Amino acid sequence: MYQEICKYPAGTKAENAFYIARIVLGVFLVSILSWLLSSLGLPLVDFLAVGVLVVWAFVIFSRRIVEYRYSLMDSELIVARIVGGKEKPVLSLEVTDIQSIGPVEKKSALRTQRFALRTRKLAAVQIVYQKDGQDRRVILQPSEHMLRLIRARAFPPPESAEE
Image (spheres, helix red, strand yellow):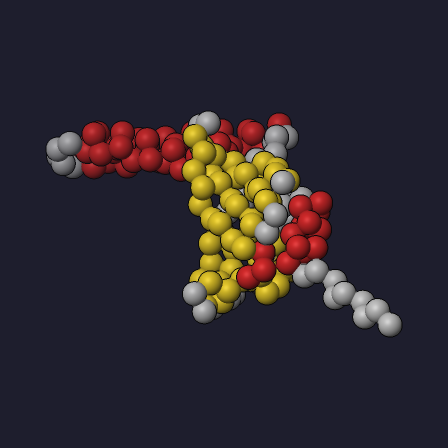
């Protein structure tokens, strides 16, 4: 068994400042919108504004706290989502069902599941597999070592013919 955790890489000072600036910008814009609507005499706008702010901050913050655990057990690839210490399995895939592994195609008609972080610091790959007679794809960000292990189990070298 081999497993690894894909987590958001530590940001630089500029990235962290941009992250905080997005939250502050959201608060500023919602505050202005709330003030404009309440000046028009619309009731309960402040409560709605607080709700929008909570959702805005949660969406931005949740992108940083999600982690994925990729586990390779014999012939099974298991992906689990980790949020706040709670782990939930989200994908179980037989490596023998894998048809191809490669770079992520921008436009694909295949049904897609994404278990990768929204960052360019980690390279994403797509794995096309077959389930219930249909081709599907999953987007992951495993290490090169994990990719080599998956490829070795999904596409074993043909046995040489002995004379």
